[in-house]
Length: 162
Length: 162
DNA sequence: CTTAATTGGATATATTTTATCCGGATATAG
DNA sequence: CTATATCCGGATAAAATATATCCAATTAAG
Image (cartoon, rainbow over all chains, first blue to last red; front, side, top):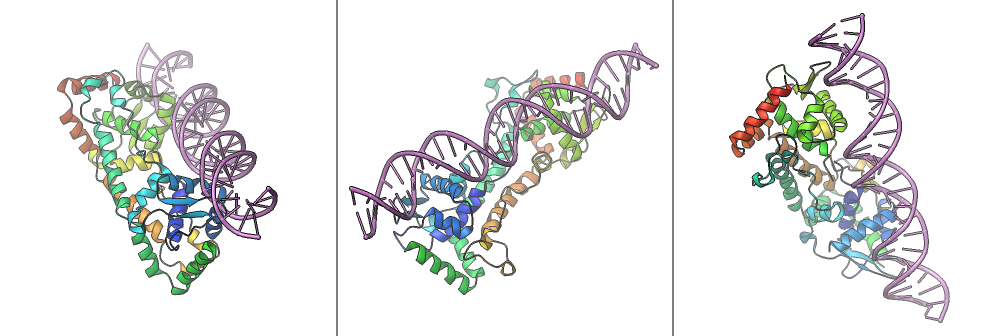
């Protein structure tokens, strides 16, 4: 069970987009260089973020991406759902209905106990991700970083946003 | 992020093995028929369970699989770790060290805030799975099933275990 | 001792998911 | 109007997962 690289990449990228001035944008190529990741693949991930309403895009020269809403309204779950999809990891195929001792469909009123247990575990996982906002991640990062490093990032963003 | 089908299959199978008499075993083919799943692939999953010490196997005629320990000493996390592997779903590739504003390796004393948030969420997921034993699943299943259904399974197991 | 049933392990194939590339559409600036 | 920068979405390649096959090793029963 692996989460795609896109989740890591786009989460980091959101923290960069977060310090952009209003209405400005940064191009995929610039973001790809900033983290040294393949720009072609990143471009696809950014489209997933846009379709999920997490970022907004502007086409043409001078265009690029920016966050579509405030950092405290974007959770890690939002990003995971956008990039990795909202499909639960555990897929119940109802094998309790199979074979010589299989239950009849009409007798399966309650959900399978095994599926229920896995769903419950996934729910606490999703709850934990939903409780973590981009705002809180940025606050933690700010506390753990040196002023020079933060300044460097701000300057880079200022240059790229033109 | 998908969990393989083997996790669902082997969890159900453990609940069947749980009602076996001591020292008896059931063959992979019989188990595959019981749930109508491909026996060749199931055989591979059962070997993973054996290597993890969850089931024990006996070779040769009359052989088969049985649980290697008590149902209250087998958790859903044990099964997931055996079949799916213990690798965390989120892989931190330390991209904060990349690019023009990358942190130097020696400045990365604290873990990346993003990786830490995902790890924490995965930990609560694993904790939830670890807290759910095969024993508790079987208890729930017993309460939700009709006596006839339970009897049917017990009879099938008795026949297959010889 | 021979035969049948079974796990063990390696290997091959198909399907699905993940990662990458490329041509076209769109917008800006000169 | 042309050149350039940028996003958009489908096509392609690589990797992981799922499935099937084969044969050797092991054990029990006749």
